[in-house]
Image 1 (cartoon, rainbow, N blue to C red):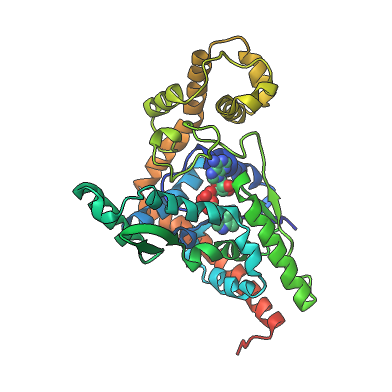
Image 2 (image 1 turned 45 degrees about the vertical axis):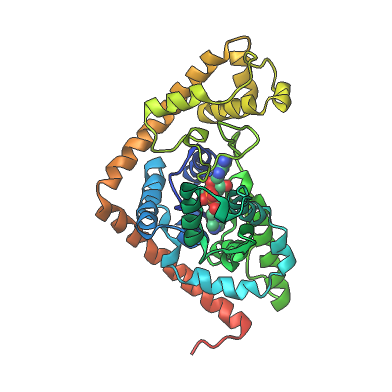
Amino acid sequence: MKKRIFSGMQPTGQLHLGNYLGALRNWVKLQKDYECFYGVMDLHAITLPQDPKTLARNTRETAAAFYAAGIDPSQCAVYPQSAVLEHTYLQWLLANHTPLGWLNRMTQFKEKSAGIHKSFIKNIKPISDLSGEEKERINQKIQELEPFMKIVVDGGSIIDVEANLGLFAYPVLMAADILIYKATHVPVGEDQKQHLELSRDVAGAFNRHYGVEYFPIPEPQILGEAARVMSLRDGTKKMSKSDESDYSRINLTDDADAIKKKFQKAKTDPLPCPSAVEEFKQRPEIENLFTIYAALADKSAKDVVAEFSGKQLSAFKNALADLAIARLEPITKRMRELMQDEAEIDRLINKSLERARALAAKHLAEVKDIIGLWRG
Ligand code: TYM
């Protein structure tokens, strides 16, 4: 029997080079050898405010990006997470096997709530002291966030932002996404490692409590040279959709000109190309660019360093931009074509949805029997 993969991406904006090198490209490579389920994780996306129309468009666009990158719809199931109700049902069942302490340790929750916190706290002046334009911006942001976060105002200043339960419970939903298909493997970027450890712990806790070996303990697959692609503006920060600066990332929808400009403007130090990978430790931005090149060229970082040793950084950056354009342009083109025909995307999604729903329903029925829940 083929081993089974589950993985997913949030439709929270344009996919970027980090999503591609850290995950999507590996999904394409793995599809031959595994039975694959690839979700567009819209229920995860709504843990932060989303514009409804944009969310719906991004959900289709994310599925289109999967197909454009080479996911074969006849082999893999691709569908929005919200269309398979069993994910959230299982989340509740697994929540009863997840101690709060495990969730409290999740660094992404801390980072996300701190990120929101920072964007407010930055402004320590009492709201009443702000200029008209600033005040309007802050009030608009409060209105947008209020249903999601509790904004604590004291003496006219924002002193705290409390995250919602959805954001806190997010890793339990991730465990359910994987376990509802009894997936054995989960290809992701480095940043999801801690969430996957939690999924493993939750699966183990359930199995132990009921004295069964029902859920497989899912194996993370963190593959390739670029499992953690960093921002082009700061080599110590992850490349991310939510970074304010578009120059921090290469989007899968960027055209050749934008890709060239972004790599030329990428932050670097004034030294020439490195002559050994050992230099990476002191030069995080250089490490990032060389790692991206290595991943795109399917070479090791060591070989790429040897190739460019002694050359000017500007020459390397040009070569990197050309390589990225050559790799990404066909994907961008296919994505644009697909987005012209939304009905076709929907048809592909609906076809694989049946398969996902049938398997999820079968497993949920088995889990309900294990727990002793009414099945009628
Ligand atoms: P998301 O949408 O943030 O990212 C999707 C995938 O892209 C990888 N990734 C990166 N890899 C390398 N460098 C980067 N800078 C970079 N940024 C993102 C992520 O590791 C991920 O593999 N919670 C998940 C979605 C999810 C999921 C799941 C994944 C929900 N349920 C179950 C696996 C299994 C997320 O927000 O990924």
